[in-house]
Image 1 (cartoon, rainbow, N blue to C red):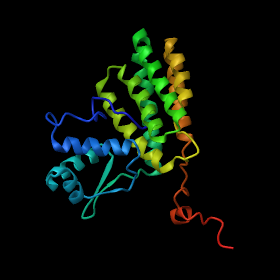
Image 2 (tube, helix red, strand yellow):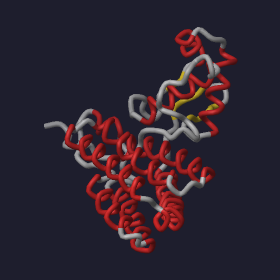
Image 3 (cartoon, rainbow, N blue to C red):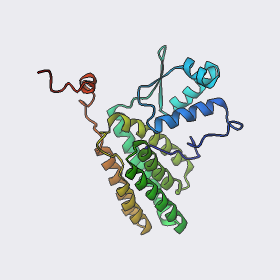
Image 4 (cartoon, one colour):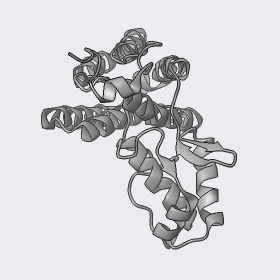
Length: 244
């Protein structure tokens, strides 16, 4: 569920630096690292260090961080600097609720108007998702899952909702990084295949039910309990059984 980004907001392809400002490059690089889970929640984003890496002033770095904060990917802490956001359990549930509302609503327009070529695009996205799962590469799986959801949403032609969804999928990547068990996959490619079968039947209500069910299942795979991070040090040290 987290993932390749659409051209409307944060393209995952490296931008042409002749057409992009340096703060755009910094923003996209950090966003990609978050989406790929190479940069986990809580990572400190030092203005000085980023300035050295990109050979720019802190002012330029600060501009990129402010934009990432507006995307809810970064938290700006007064007098303490910026960190990659750490979504709470309540925020995680709200993100999934918002995704169920937006993604099911977008199907109302896209499903009855979808062409055979668009069905083909979705089949390619599902195939890529399946290949990612076969590779057992977690980052690739998250990105491929996001590709499917973004690709399907783009077929609604509602750029405003696509922008909202793009932000929510980015936040989902942070949520998965914090709350997903490493033994489970929060977004199943099998569910995408089943959803596509319903879409090809032009069954709007059925597709909406399948989407909501799928996103509920994704949420249920996460360990969203109040005690999940109650004692992180013990978890890190595998000290739950105590000393002999």
